[in-house]
Image 1 (tube, rainbow, N blue to C red):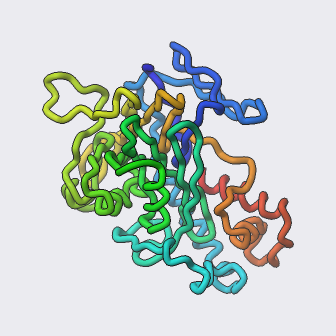
Image 2 (cartoon, one colour):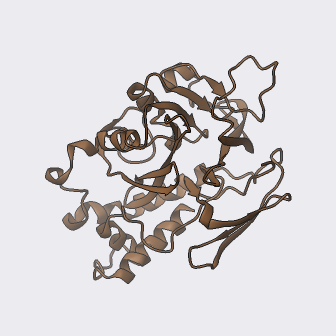
Length: 333
């Protein structure tokens, strides 16, 4: 399959076979929901074409503004505090070892993980990415290869619960994928490789660190097995991934920016699992649920649903929760 790519929109997604109807020679991808209604129509372009020149960090700036705007109301209301420490499962605790813009910013935290099968030998695991009261699903995709080993795309927060759910999908983890430059999708790769030290690491092109340039070994904890360039040839010095007969890939170029005084082209690698006919992407395309995701905290949804921080908390109804989710999406996309 060639020339498949779509316009950049949102957070990590996987489009299973039932969600798309055609992938033609002209690379036109039509998405349909389970009810048959068209959710989106994405006209693809050639892999070499630049995606729109939009700095995705503007989204984080918007989310930070929303957090600052609502933090007073959020912190003053006992009913919308984070999970009571007594209710946190030890298997859901982890430590964030790199400073980030999302919760917990740095240090100890907890996240719940859910897992489901979306096809033969393919699974998705989800946790929430949080910034203030805003919660959006973050996804890891796991494929069981024909030899029984596992291929893990964009590992999530390193909780015992997450690790055990991944390992329940098959035999040992053989491959870990860092599919993009974006911090939230690669910050836990090092933890995953500490859990699965024998796994090979494959990354999208043009990985970088900011504000200081450090080695991939420092970032990921080991040397990269291979960079997923557009193609491997017999003259390529690096190893060809052993999984390419089951999973095709294409590395997509986004905008080029001056980062730390160096011109850097942002890249993402997309994948196509042949057996399940599933397209696996990170930020290139998103299918946003029209219902509230299962991991979202109702209290935070109610808080966000308010028109003003000075308004009283609304009644807990399905519509109020949905209003909160829709406002979350509007602030995140």
